[in-house]
Length: 163
Image 1 (cartoon, rainbow, N blue to C red):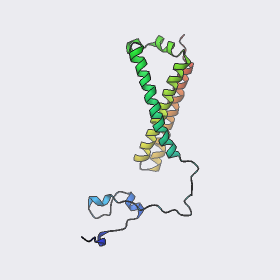
Image 2 (cartoon, one colour):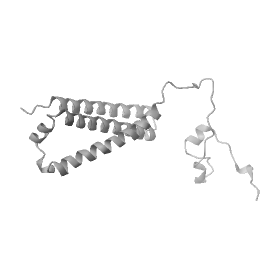
Image 3 (cartoon, one colour):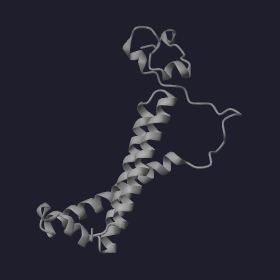
């Protein structure tokens, strides 16, 4: 069986990236593999940091730590401390009187917010098509993350049971 190469067309990288295919009407043409990028003089040899690799690593490590923190939290709150019906203002005041529980809840808050924000950053990068839309969505998400982390930290450390 011989392969006929007359049906093959070379596609520029920008055309293949649009996902519109070769314009032949065949839906399979939308799945064109781009040729490897070629390093030019303008392409830097090495970036200063590898942010995406560090973000990927943070997601894996924070996910493992969050599983331990959350399962520990649920076990203590639901099984050992008598369940949700006992959670009230006095319960929280007694719990946050201990630096251990302040640190536990603070670590859970920070890791959960940063883990979620990093995941949302990835989703925004994947699905926002325009650079300006991507910038605004990531700015709003970053502002909401900073606001929530700061407010939660403030509440944990300034909680006054004598209100």
